[in-house]
Image (cartoon, rainbow, N blue to C red; front, side, top):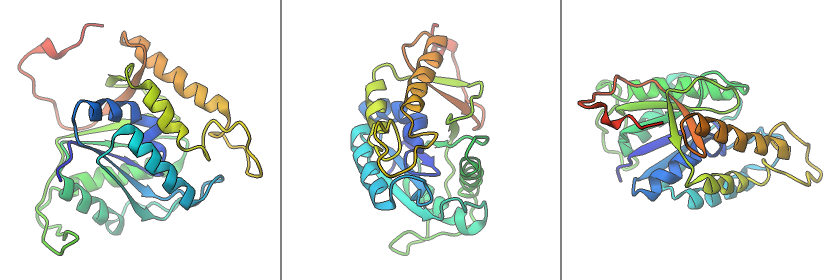
Amino acid sequence: MKLDLIAFGAHPDDTELGCSGTLASLAQAGKKIGVIDLTRGEMGSRGTMEKREQEAAKSSALIGLKVRKNLGLPDTEIQNHRAFQIPIIREIRRYRPRIVILPPFEDRHPDHGMAARLVSDAVFYSGLLKIQTQSEDGMDQQPYRPLHVLTYMLDTPFEPDIVFDISDTMEVKKQAVRAFDSQFDVADPGDEPVTYISDPAFFETLIARARRYGYRCGFEFGEPFRYSGRPIPVQSFDLLADS
């Protein structure tokens, strides 16, 4: 199956925080959307790998994903080298998306920046003929490089190039994030520690940020992105929205 877009996250729940409103909107429009998580988040202070796998499945259904995979790379040990690039290249060549969305290159959690550099390089190398990969059934894969590469925002703000209107899918985003109930908006932490992201105030800042970027563009809610792909060819400026 060919996908229109793949969003990558260092951990399960990263794409929910950064771009789930956009993914849900595109899925509702009939686009085929996938998410690939690099690690299982096994080093997180709260929850377990098994719990986060269940949470990811629930969130995926809410967003309307066609594909969700976890590559099982070691949490907190993501490195940008060929052994970690190859499984990403394999998935890009398998699904051949037009658009890839990455984590931010600079962020509070070191894994996010490392994941961005890893996936960004894998996107480039996926287009090289002499880097050879095989599909799950042992067939040689053909080179392929996505046309457009974007990065979503997590903790560290940046000045975006694109703000996607998620006014109609903000409730889906809230539900998708809350599906990770071991991680976010935790009213009763139980025996596990209260963390930076489990505090309900963090969830409120997520909503406030979407409102802020939406307001800047004339939307109720928006998700900010940086664009780092090749120049976008246009033949008319009619595509520029009034705002």
